[in-house]
Image 1: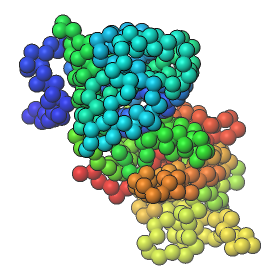
Image 2: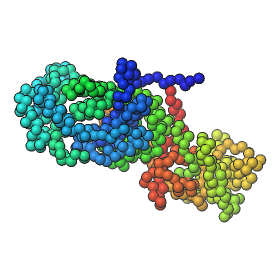
Image 3: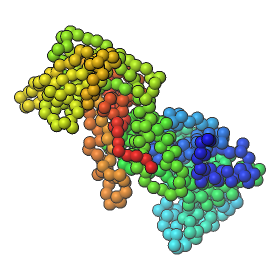
Image 4: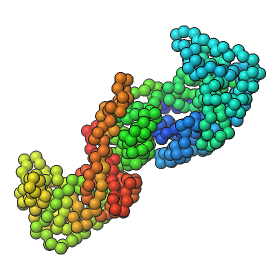
Length: 557
């Protein structure tokens, strides 16, 4: 039986309809147009997956075009980070392009618009322009410069370009309709004066195009067939089309803008301005802090790219915004890691366990599987000795029948090793247990095939040989915020909802194989969680970050 076909989303319906109406498939071209003023976040992954996913579906090229029209906020660092994020997610773009590639053409088109009476130089301040726009429920007030002679606007625009005026002295505005109910059509600014160096063009330009002017025209230059953006730009579409009308030639592909709902995830924020503030105020260690909702942060935390893409696929493409439960994302992370993470043993809150009847200088190497979910993962050897570390919470002097871990007089199996029985403890002056003493059954070694090895006990504990233990720093990450929508409260500062327990650092021990751990590779610390080696690691201090806990009650619908 053929696998049931996945229904088309509304964007795919638009494309299929265009193809049915005669649009040539070989003219399909998409783009992902980030502004390099920060790192990409979880919300951007949706736009990335939509655009590149359509490229893969239709065998169409996808451009990476940086919207670098604001030199005040843009840096090469962000360009490099965005390219790394897209590569990590597994996508390949056709061309790397920049809005700044088109500054000359945009300028020339703007000059032609002035000549055609479609644009004018306005000497008012931005505050005056804003006040004259009024509201959607009342007519705007025309600028006193709206009908200035064409030659005068041309001369002033040329002087703006030459850098003869200070910032804010004047701007170039499109002449559209000051009475339009759509505020974007009320003579929008096309160019402003910015006497700032650009990360690619240096000091060449003293004027820079506004987003609405540069965006659609860049799409047209690149012959993008479907310009897909988030829902916040829906009311910009009439302006997008109006600008396109001014330059469109009948033998070209006429690009069309269509909008989809942004993706909001609980316990995360996706405002670049607010993410910038977290970094600037040292609430986090940087843009790639594992608690950040940035792609680089999620990569550093150990999220597999396929898990993020599966999450985006499940969320789907919608026309209405909603809040996605972070537990759905975490579900896909666990599902992926369960299949791919190498199982290792580590103890994050250690207490010493001495096996009294094991030879004092004894040592043996035991075989254990790397991943029971992957039959091709193989096995490895781990050392066993008289003195071990186990988790402190895995032992109680006295416990009821429902406590299936170690207790005085009780038996457990040590993972891939022997059955032991606890006998006594040592304590310090505060009553804290410092050492547990136990006896082992030498015939009960896992996998030996003896009758004793087949004996069933209810508890199995992970452990680390003290003689061979590898000291590790373990970073236990939790959600950065204490509330699902930290920026929803208009009367409160979102910083008030920072989780003081979003990071806990503990010292533990791990099996010696982790000395060869690869930065970013997934590991399951058995019975604790999923971890990855952090880039902060050194030969003297290995650092592992918790990617996710082992289990959650959440079940996706």
